[in-house]
Amino acid sequence: MTDARRDAASGDPFEGFRAGARATTIPSQFFTEVLPGIVSVEELRVTLYALYAITRTGSPPVMRASAIAAEEPLARAFAHHGGAAAVRAGLDAAVARGVLRALVLDDGDLLVVVNTDAGRRLLTRIEAGAEPAPGGAVMRPSEPTPAVSRPAQMYEQEIGLLTPAVTAALAEAEAKYPPAWIVDAIRLAAVRNARSWRYAEAILHRWETEGRDDESAGGPAGRPANPFDALIHRD
Image (cartoon, rainbow, N blue to C red; front, side, top):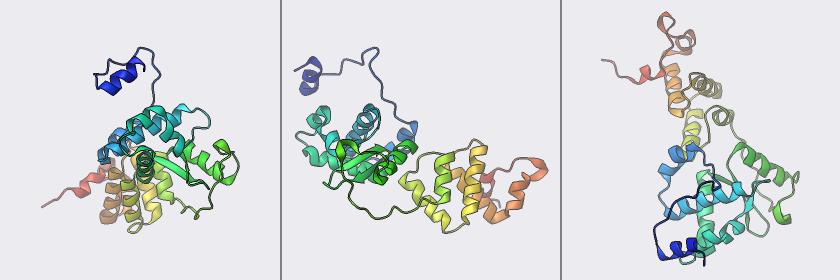
C-alpha cells in the first residue's frame, strides 16, 4: 500500500497537494448554483469524482457508469457504503440534478457526459450513430427527448447551465408570458451584464406592469430602466 493510501485508510491528515500536480477544472456555477442544493454526501462525492473522471478521459469525454464505479478511489470510498449500487444511485442523482447527462445502454449501463454544450452534442452524435460509443455499446431505444424551448436555449446561450430550479422557473414563465418576451428579457439581461434569471424575471415583471414601450425607450430622460424598480413597493 502506498503512503497516500495508507494515510487515507488510517485517517491521517492529508499532507497537502504536490506542486505541479494535475488540476481538474470545475465550473464556478457548480459552487454557486449546484452545491447549495446537494444534501446527500454520497451524491456530492460521486458527482465530484465523475467530473474528474470524465474530463480526464480526454477524447471523447464520456464514460460508462460502471467504469466510473470501478475506479479504484471511488470503489474504495464506497466499499463499505453500498458499493457500485450506491455509486450508480449517486450518478442517477447527478443526472436528475442536471450536472451530468446520460444515455441508457442496452445492457442497462449508462453512458455519462458532463452537461455542457460539447457533452450534449457528443451524446446526441453517439445516440444517432454518428460517433461510436465507447466499448461498442449498444443504445436502448428511448422515448423522444422533449424539444428544448427557445427561452431555455437562450438562457443556456446567454446566462449559463440550466439547473432544475431555473428549468422550473422558465416553464412557469412560459405559461405566463409570450416566449418572445422571455427571450428578449434574457438577452437584455446579458447585454446589461446582469446574467441571472432573477434579473430577466424582473424585466418581464416590469413589462407586464408598465408595458414594453418604457423599457425599450430606456426609461425617463433616457436613463436605463432598472427592472427591479417594479418590485419596490411605493406608497
